[in-house]
Amino acid sequence: MKTIEKSDIKILLDEATIQTRIKKLAEELNSEYKDSEVYVICVLKGSIMFTVDLIKHLTMPLKTEFIRLSSYGSNMTSSGKVNAVDISLPDLNGKNVLIVEDIIDTGHTAQFLTSFINHNFKVKTYKFISLLDKRCKREVNINPDMYGFEVEDKFLIGYGLDFDGYYRNLKYIGYIE
Ligand code: IMP
Ligand code: MG
Image 1 (cartoon, rainbow, N blue to C red):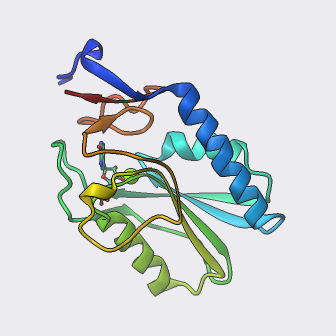
Image 2 (cartoon, helix red, strand yellow):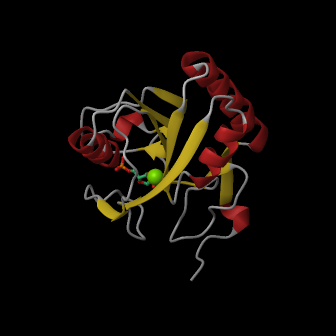
Image 3 (cartoon, rainbow, N blue to C red):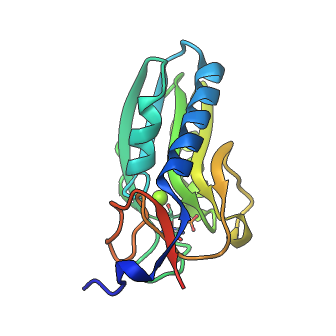
């Protein structure tokens, strides 16, 4: 059941702010990778919006892969346990791998994914990009190579981020007080 009214949502990052930043991040990636092929790995479900908008601005040859991890239940705190719902990937040996995440909170998901990739493949390059970085909540020593915005310790919804499965479709990122 939906428990948050739209009128209770405070906007933290509006649509234009998000899109402008994503374009900037894409430009940086374009100049770093140039014409090298990249495997873009979207971590479902949260990073669907970010991945879609980011790859529209990327100019190198790329392939998109989708994996599904879950760590949050339907509550508002990270469980610290990562559940690999679907982590089937092609052969990434010798490839440029770009992981795309919505948010790094405790860091457990990022750490799990990074060790999973390193354990299974000898990739050419590995980069982790997250739209949001909730650095103040970190429990493990891991940081994204690139991020869009550093955010405070608030439970955020919208633009891929959900509360109990809802609000992923919002064009902005907001929070509930
Ligand atoms: P971590 O493993 O604690 O770093 O959490 C990673 C995942 O938790 C993210 O990919 C999100 O799906 C989810 N998450 C973390 N913070 C929030 C939030 O504020 N709102 C919604 N989901 C969140
Ligand atoms: Mg996520």
